[in-house]
Length: 472
Image (cartoon, rainbow, N blue to C red; front, side, top):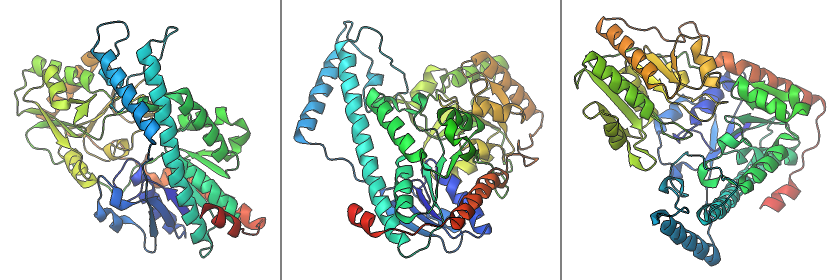
């Protein structure tokens, strides 16, 4: 199997855990795996200890990511737009736009234009379109070089299937190119949907991004032998988009790892934790306000309750400590920088309550949820009703509250705090094994085996030379 996934250990980036675990499972089914991944030398966070979790014989090949070099004209245009936006933000007129929507910020605010488009929004739209095209150009470049490496490897290694995992979804384009060159089937693993409006980062939200995403998604999907989605809701979405591919679409959730047991190591402080970045609509302020209400109701002193975030230090470029302070959590809130997974798991062990923050991605389930369900901790889920996260956790016994319901959050925190002081301890939500990763992965690998068996029956000759020459 040739796996193409930008996210893979030792790089500790979003999505890397999925195939770290799935390659180990693949080995138990007789698969030898090579991986084309991001260059570890470029990693913001790298954890070489995770290499110990990989199966014997796996080979990793890093593909460097190169940032697009803008032309002098583009640079001047960007500088002009930045100056124009700065002037508009500082004005008091109708054209003023909030700083949070300026490209480059971490805001997740949606800014759909009305019938009247102000100069500020027109400039912003041009800038977003420019950033969208640049992003696609950069990732297409990565995908082309990944494909060239995959084709070169294929000339010496008889791969039977190519699997890609995204985002970044351009990995799927690389998989199709390798499959076209070698005549082997390819499978697409979508950790998140691709061409769906809620999955567009606000910095590039534009008609250009929408057109490019729709075009490249269809190009990748059109000849895929298998399409794997991460949740049942995402599978339904893909079936609606591609009814002709219905029989090729399956679901394989991330799942929980039975070997990861997280016993509670609680102290005297009721720790409420969140480990991860804040993006995609995740807003902790309603949760902060709910905790403050519980503190006031029960008269909880600093030191008896602590809210601790690891990984996200800002919200809309505002330090989280300042956001927490505005919500009344001075003396109760601690913010830590992004750390390796083992540190996040250690924090989870010390936590009486782990929080799932709300997100705009209703078809996806945050990967950390499948760690939470293995922990002896109460899980507070702030997810929209009938979202993928809500559907997963509601029947499992988590405390599910609407994302903006500070009063409901307060009731849950108060109840669990009283339980904590009374000596009660929760069982892991996955105590019955319903969320085990192998249970989730088995249908996908059964489908891969069927695809490979079908390809063997109708084997086609491999063709390398022309594509190797074309891709360099």
